[in-house]
Amino acid sequence: MSLRPQDVIRRKRDREKLSRDEIASFVRGAVDGTWADYQSSALLMAVFLNGMTDDERHHLTEEMLHSGEVLDFSDISKPKVDKHSTGGVGDKTSLILAPLAAACGVCVPMISGRGLGHTGGTLDKLEAIPGFRVQLSLEEFRRLLERIGFAMIGQTGELAPADKKIYALRDATSTVEAIPLIVASIMSKKLAAGLDALVLDVKTGTGAFMREEERARELAQALVATGNSCGVRTEALITDMNQPLGRAVGNALETKECIEILRGEVTEETRPVLELSVELAARMVALAGTETSLESARSAVLRALSSGAALELFRRNVEEQGGDVKVCDDPTRLLPLTLRSVKVESPQEGFVTGVDAAEVGRAVAIMGGGRTHMADRIDPAVGYLTRARIGEKVSRGDELGTLCFHDERLGRMAAEIIRAGYEISEKPPAELPTLIKEVITA
Image (cartoon, rainbow, N blue to C red; front, top):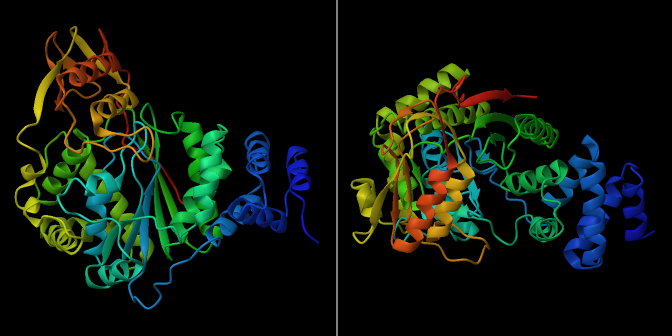
């Protein structure tokens, strides 16, 4: 007997538990049009208001996962592991941890996204490398995984097509923040890559999607539970996003920073990027089982960095995906000679007690470094280099950071936004942000 959309909607409206068949009816209907958009939207709002049980969330994830092709890399002998971040400002770890993990014997089939709003996207960072192709066929993707051990591409239309449709409706109906819907969206796309294990980086703070730590923990726990219930070993780190991660914000600047770290050129300002990348990569390696413990996995990852093995894999990946490999020897090639810069100065003396990271990201987007709609074109070169971190003392006129821009008018606007985003007080903060706040393993 066919299920009527209005009956499914009514049951969730009345806080009843939906069966797998009812959830499958919704997912199929959203994709093939047998559910009208207003009916799908009504169910999404009912989920937003009334939530879902663990079983419902699991069923929704699996139905969205199987709405399209699920990749099969079982013929690749190495364990398949990926990482996903909920997004932030200056969040660039994918470019470092993928070659690090691959150098430790793990296969990393990374299907990534683009930046939207104040957050950056891995694909945009990669495309800052001249010639780099992120839209590869699945055959090319598989070949790179076999030859190099990792590849980073954009989502294809064949993988989890239900997510694209349902996300558009969530965006139009202000139901994006519903945790069951977030979980199903993230996990359906990630699990479609045929993973054995997954490590999640759930951000919390002023530049994160989940600003409140309690909500970030709730999301992390739901993601881990769903991943494990789908047969994929899953862990999550809750990490700080109360200030940009590392120094660089902006696609070319962030890519330059990542290559410098892979080259061993680490400063105190970029050390948090290295530390988080190493920890995420180590957990990927440990979950994959290629090392006997997390401690030995950390040691293996650090060896891959210090020996240059990770940099060499990154170089090979850039070449195979059509990019200019010379950037691996001279990362400054990523920045055009026409780029202009200006210092953002502190308006007063005191201690930096807060940074609105979302405003930093918004300022870079205003200069052309981000997008409001997915179809927007971006300028990869523009960005911001942070200098003053939370807890540091500054004098009036001291450099908070440096803006890089092409359009002087937009640069002035961005400078004012960033300057207003810094909180400077007479007394130092009671405590400094902790980079890794919590680890969720079950």
